[in-house]
Structure formats: C-alpha cells, structure tokens
Image 1 (cartoon, chains in turn purple, brown):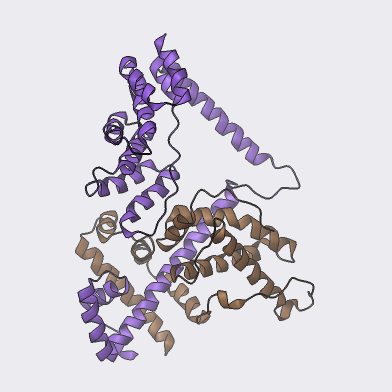
Image 2: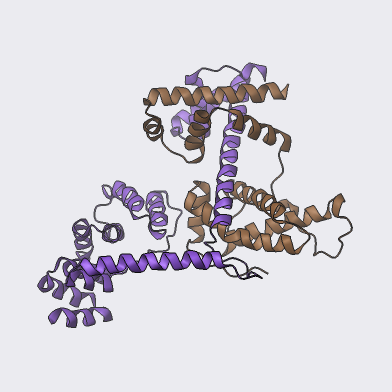
Length: 246
Length: 186
C-alpha cells in the first residue's frame, strides 16, 4: 500500500479514465491485462477508486445540506399541516402575486393586440415522459428533464448538439421549436416547427401547426396564421380564428 | 402510510438523474420526500435534527444502490417509496439500538439485505474531514469534475486557467487527499 503514493499525473489520468469508464474497449482490455499482472497498479486502481467515490459522496452530502436549508427557508413543496397559522408563506405568496399582477399589467398595458392574443392562448407544451435506456437517447432525455423543470435554455443546448445526427427527427424538432418559443424566440421556433409539419405521420403534426399559428399571431400576421390554425384542429384554434377575423 | 406526491419525473428520469447527479432531480427527490420523514421521526420520539441525519443517510444509501444497480424500480412511486422505506427502517433501527430499548411496540423487523453493506464508516468520516480541509479551489475543482460531471474545459474557464493547468491542479488536489488518507491508514 505504501507504494501507491506519488504516481505521475499521466499515470493518474490513465487510471482515472479507466475508473470513469472513458477508455475505448481496446484500451480497457490492455489496461486490465496489465493490471492483472501488476500488483502495484492493482493497488493504485483500488485506492483511487475509493478516493473518487468518496469525493463524490462528500460532494453529494454538501448538496443535500444545501437542499435542506433551502427547504427550511422557503416551503416550496407541500409541507405538513401546521398547528399554528403561519403568516410568512402567505405574505410571500401575496407579494409574489402582487409582483405578478404588476408585471402582467405592465406587459399587457404596453403590448399590442396580437401579443395579447398570443399571451392569452400560448401555453408551453408540458413535455413528454421519456423512456430511457437507449444510449442514443441519453442527451435527449437529459434535455427533457431540463425542459420539464422550465430550464428551456439548458434543454436547447443539449438538443442542438444531437440535432446534427438526427436532423429529421420529428420529436427533436418539435421540442426544440417549443423550447425556443418558450424562451421568446419565435423565429428560431418557426424553423423547427416547420420541420415537424413536414412529417404527416408525426404525433406532433397537429401540435406543431398550432404553435406555428401562434407565432404568426404574435407577429401580427393574421392571414398566414389562419391556415396554420385550421390545420391544428384544436378547439381553441376555432375560437382564436374567430377573434382574428374581427 | 405514504402520501401520494406529484411526481414530475418518470422512473427512468429519476434513475438517470440519480446516476448522473442531476441537481434538479436530486433536489426534487430530497425536498419532496423529506417532510414525510420529518413527520414520521418527530411523531416517533425524535427531533428535526435526527430526522435530517437519518434522511440524509437514507438518501445516500438510495443513491449508492441506484448507481450500483442494486435497486431496480418496478413502478411509478418506486424511487421515492424506496427512499421513504429506507429512512423509516433506519429510524426504527435507531430506536431499537441500546439507547431506546424501552420502546417495544414499534412495527415489524425488516430485511436489511437491501441496504448498503456499511463499508468502514470511520474511513468515510476521515475522508469527509480531510476533504473539508482541502483549500477552497481544490474542493471546488474536485466537486465540479467528479460530482457535477463538468468537463475540464468548463472548469478551466470558470477558474480562468488553461485546460492543462486545470488538469494539473486536479491531479495535485487528488494527490494531497490521497496522501492524507494514506497516512491515516498507517
């Protein structure tokens, strides 16, 4: 065991890449052969493995403490029924509502009719339940976790990376479009949604038309919005069509 | 009994999130499940601090078991339910320990096999203490790389280092930790 001190950086990084599973199959195979013959290497692998696991565990523990103090500071999740009435959350809620009301007023007060219509009808797609397991879907699924927690920028960053390999994937295009719309970038959203509508068998076909229609409404292009909204087949679309006719 | 919880993540997303230390998933799991355990512990001769300790211990057990594929979920509430069960069992174990022998009418025994084989707790405590003694930069770089799974490129940028410097610093931080732990062993 004493011999495991002072390994070179190069040797450390080689062992680390083995432990973290970053080696190619070939590298891994030759590494394992070498390890089986060399007790010193074997001891080093074992020690470093424990060390890295512990670093991860201690880091996790620190995060847990953060989650805990956050939980105690702001009751975001449904808490236990409380015996005495607690005014603090109510006061917070009231101020948040007030803030929302003011910003809504400012926003609506300064926006045009088309934007008002857009705001009234637009709700981001809630996202989908992903069935993971396939290696190739990993990045997509990670992105969906971001998307569902409202971190649309993070989702976009992940999804754009995989778009190059799957430029025609309807699900990917649809959710990229949806994420761009959610962050207020209708122009980007449009190109991805249009891509989705090229695939008639897509389960997102109609939804994509609905959101495309909404981007046209937002831009004030009511004439271009009409055929798109009609194709969406959504009940709200009929209502919205009535409104833009006037 | 466990109350139903609104669960924004599918079982696969929870598992993947735990395996990749996705903060959103870890945080949701922690914050949605902790109140139930606090309620349980406080109702059973414990206080909030004990609830926190027991729950975090259980959380780390679940994290370990999910990552080593010892735990494979079966249905929608599997991961949160599993966490709740382990925390509850740990609390019952605590109550059964010598200090609490008097308390007898607590539920049935459980199968310990599903829990971690507690590997040398003292080593873990030493490691935690030594880790905390490392400099701020060392802790940060190790946490970012091994826990948050950030790339060396990202880390180098955050510290305004070159990537080579970042890698060298990571190596030196690990060496320092390794030396300290090794001296403890002897």
